[in-house]
Length: 131
Image (cartoon, rainbow, N blue to C red; front, side, top):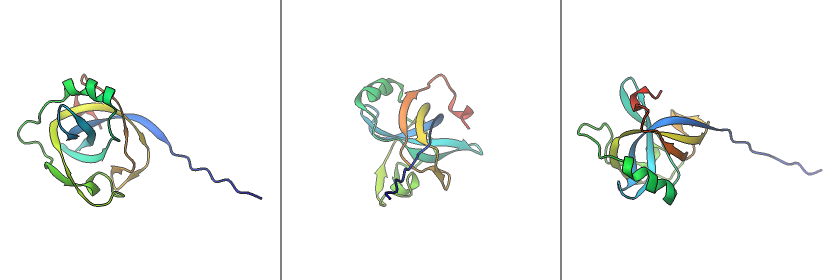
């Protein structure tokens, strides 16, 4: 008798805060995602590489971060993905922007376990209202 094993991943769509990108403001590679906890913007994950069409739509909404952005410009890849080989990741900090993502619902240590998929920007939603 052959046993078939099926792995099921549960994905959900929800809003988070984008606080940085890999790449530049004109050519974003991935979004670094966060959420506000006790008034502080905390890194919780990243998106998979952003598709070119989505990047073109996102670029006009990306603004440079104001002074006092809480994130460093270089982080360990383990900050947003505990299962990645440890390497340094250069960030371009942006003004916090609400985005909608589709992500596996698995959370490990307060971070999204797998890379999320960027769905769309939500510039009308205040990032501080996202919980």
